[in-house]
Image (cartoon, rainbow over all chains, first blue to last red; front, side):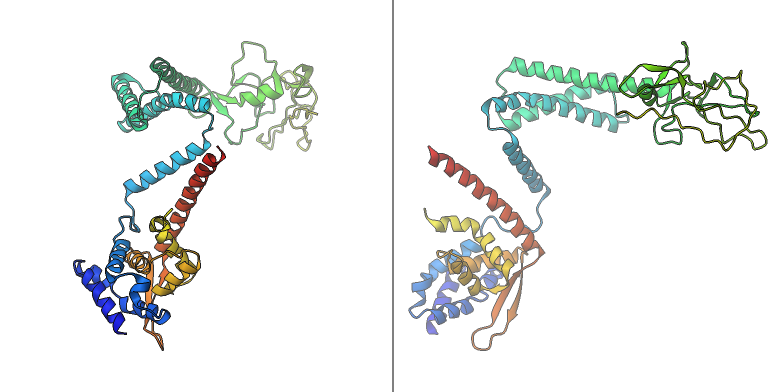
Length: 328
Length: 109
């Protein structure tokens, strides 16, 4: 046992310069360890463990390794880690083909510009503008700055300028034009949609409705009724649905919110020839007052017209819903 | 190639893996690592690593009194240790794959 004591003393001596707290922790069960080894091994401890000095050095090295476990990692390290992982995944996804790599390499400026534009839009939105088409000197300036910075960052991070400067600048300019063109398009279509027309294709009760048959209180079908919502916006039923399933035979010029429309069913979805004369049947409005029940025009009959007022009230009749003939 | 150099880099994950299987005291960790095939692992390295991992908050420890021999300080993984092990495992797998790819590639030529 004296060998254990001697060995332990030598190890402790070799670690004399370690700060007390760490030293205590390091040497905590040194004797226990040595005892285990001694119990298993007959010769001197040094035969198995090396000199006490080398044991101490090894212990110290393993303890003070420069890459310790980090239970809480800094944000910077996390970001760097995530960045590395993304890059590794990208490396794996990018084809090994050198030509493809070249293309991707040359396309990076496109990404830089797009990223700059996006950043500028965000900043502009923050500065009290709105997220959308940038207007004004400030927005333009911001855009230039952001794109420049993004470009600079991209070139700095990846190291080295792309090979064909002209091609790259051309691509960048193209990207700018494309981005602006897209934004412009989005805005104009929004503006076109916004002020004039109220499309009912949004899950409201009228969603899926293609035609409206207004009736007067005394049961007379009305013609050329213009419908508006509470904002004075014309109510236009889902024009796509109408266009896909029906032919609008309303004589031009027709207002988009004038009802009822003279819709004509297609023979089938693939045959775009309208079936002459078969107009979408009208249904009697349930909203009619109970004392005056409007008539239901016969399902396959002509369109409801004011010249044929209802004289046979039939509230229980089950009209055929206006459905297009199913396609084969 | 000198495996002791390689061991330095992976001893943490090796120790964590052993302890993930079951709690062990210092010398048992040494023995289990050797049984697993890491014959070159140094006693002091394992002890130093255990202390460092404990200090870093990756391990729990408790003393179990022993009737014949000395009391034994057992180590086990806590949540942090398990997270660290998962991370290290992934890192190691990636690294090993990379090296395999590199070596396979040059071997064929």
